Amino acid sequence: MAGGFQDLLPVMANKLGGEGLIKELCNGFELLMDKEKGLITVDSLKKNSVSILGLQGMNEDEIVSMVNEGDLDGDGALNQMEFCVLMFRLSPQLMEDSTYWLQDILEEEFRNSGFS
Image (cartoon, rainbow, N blue to C red; front, side):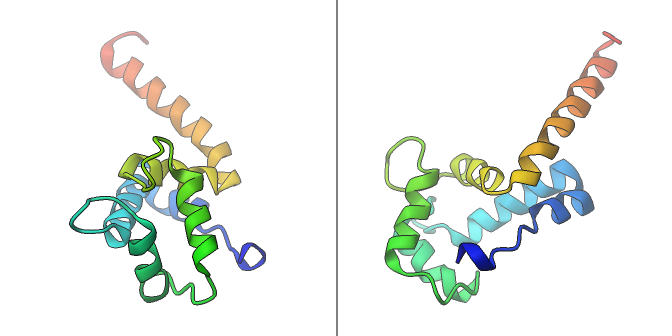
């Protein structure tokens, strides 16, 4: 799977901007989550990996590893924040670009608050 992975998040970020990208990640989370639990579980990811993501080649170990990699609180599932953090971590270019976005946001906040 890793060999065929194409990182499209930077392209989306450039097109949508920071806020737009976060909105799209939130939409992606909702598509993949277990509707009753409000979390992405191994089962919900397994169910949606083919129908939504088109990842026919993923086996259960890869799905479990993906959830475990993003599971920061150890509950065996991904909440929305963990999912977004994982998506950023899986995109080296996006991690680099996020530094610039943070700087822009902070500068805008300072201008708006009169600290410029």
